[in-house]
Length: 126
Image (cartoon, rainbow, N blue to C red):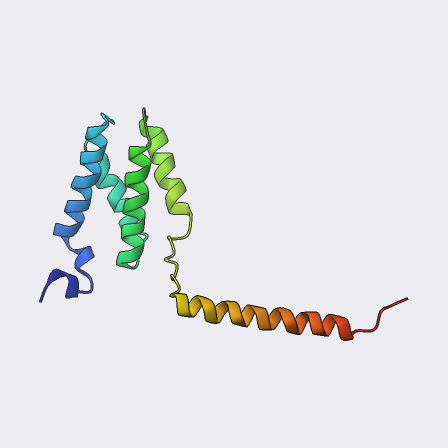
């Protein structure tokens, strides 16, 4: 069975260590403080996630935040982690196919027509 087929493979120590290593690598790349921050950061968002999608969403946000930093202090990093974790987990949006989009647009047009017809049928108040 491949790793992709294991439902909770993202919870394994090996997978989590690879995430910690990536966070530490980014911190070191930008000369940002201690190397143990990666472990602390990963533990903070791992404890808040229930799915692989949520977990990877937090990983992506942290890595993007690190890449956008020029200079950082420990307290500021802690505040960033707390702020990200205080928000709801990232949601994935469904991308509609052209057929689904056309169907959706037709339904909106029908609703608009019904609303306009209903508005025209109402007697005007004087």
